[in-house]
Amino acid sequence: MKSKEIGKLVGSIVACQVAGGIGSIFTAPAISTWYATLEKPAFTPPNSVFAPVWITLYLLMAIAVFLIWRKGLDEKVLRRAFLIFWGQLIINILWSVVFFGLKSPLAGVITIIILWFAILLTLITFFKNSNVAGGLLVPYIVWVSIATYLNVGIWILNP
Image (cartoon, rainbow, N blue to C red; front, side, top):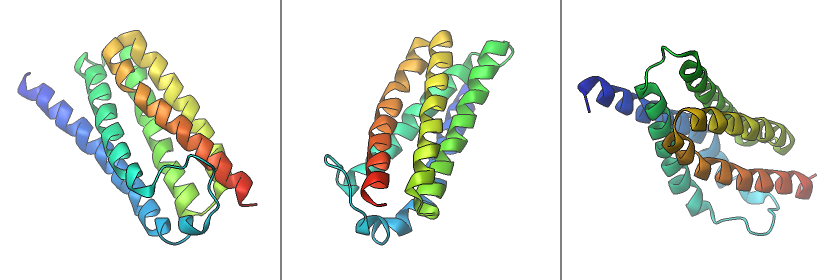
């Protein structure tokens, strides 16, 4: 890899992990307080699972967006995929803000559904440009599907 490519990879990793860090600013304080008081649906993973899964997912996202960025952004289709990725990452952060920060399961449901469709759009555009980049996002949409189930369950169980 050229030094310019290494810079893109490192930048992608840092940006994605920072996004996760921003989300955790809203999540961490609520876990042992508000979130602990909520009724949760069956098959809710233990709290200790969430941080390692998200750190891994942000790393996979970073590698995926790097693979798109590495191809260059001169082509409209690559530039579009790149921008869609960053848009969905903003929605990802927003979910933590509304669900944990605002303590709003309903707003969380609305946001996570938008996020799920944004991830799907990202997946589709990534697969059109790189099977590897698209494949790296599959665990992300699977996990957000699980998170959607949990969020909807929490909203239903905690009127």
